[in-house]
Image 1: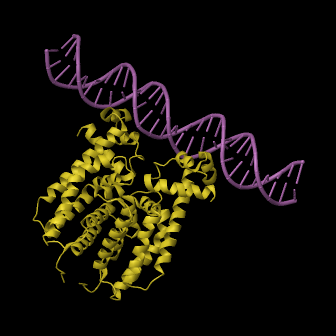
Image 2: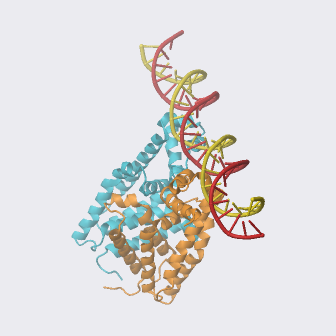
Image 3: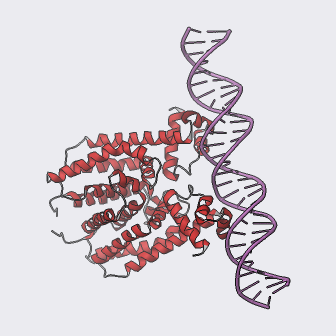
Length: 197
Length: 197
DNA sequence: GTAGTCACTTACCAAATGGTAGAGACCGTA
DNA sequence: TACGGTCTCTACCATTTGGTAAGTGACTAC
């Protein structure tokens, strides 16, 4: 892997965990085993590195979710598939969701730049839900806020780890599976037209 | 209001919105109309200011929620009361929830210091839910993760405003009410023993 | 063999940051 | 009037930050 690629990878983790402002070029360079100037050589400026990190992460994240979205039938099973994909992403590449949250943050200077990459995926999701509701496959509900709540719960599991710890839980596979069940129950209650029981 | 109090108030907003690292003493002082040294005089160091902000905010937040928790009967109505109180807090003092999330963040240096203030409130909530489940007032479910999901949804509304914007929503009263309904439906589905309908 | 490019270095620099030292203004008390 | 305490200021300081300039070695094309 080239230094440039490694730099993006290392910076992703730093930016996601501590935030962009609190992650210095020197710190990133040290982890790479090169000098700060080498990082600047590859990206021109810190802003250049930040853009590269966000662009690459957004690309990877959409690719991952996009590939999951085409895999199963419309209706409840495909929702399960998407949620499962999101949670396995949360465990395997937590920094992707961490960065998503960093950019979703109030007043983030990169939000417009990055979120427009996600716009198609978001629109697709909302459309999918709304059409499902029109067709009677899903119960009528507030699709945007159902999506937002799901987003919040999933990103929280990688970002709000201290809150999890305060509940006596750590971020591991078992907890992730339990939260996945909770989220799926929420979605089932919000979307399932029959009352199962 | 004294300069010290105003400093805490101004710093709260900065820390909640941009993060502690990205909010400088000079910036805070400028908003107060004093010099940086005046701020340092009152708190000794930036770390001192940070501690004061977190301590004061944690105190205000617990007080607010504590007072709501004693107001209504055990069971479903009291959950409604708590959720309503949280949402009105989100609209009226968003920085309190923003700071809570800042401290819940992975690897936050202040988490232990602050979250232990919340520990009694958290324990009380979990206990409340578990007892309700034992008594059959609530459906048996994963109380900790139900609480965590609710926390995630509520804090997201003040912190992930860019994500809300990407959904075509802004943070206003109407959206907050809609999200509150969504959260309450989730809780009702997770906790209500009878299947209403 | 030499010109050129790529990846990286050392040597600096200006600005911003948190922090210290000391002095002046105000205020109640003796 | 003098005194101690509180609050704020000006004047510095050391460190860290992102960034520039210039150079070195390796590898390639002609």
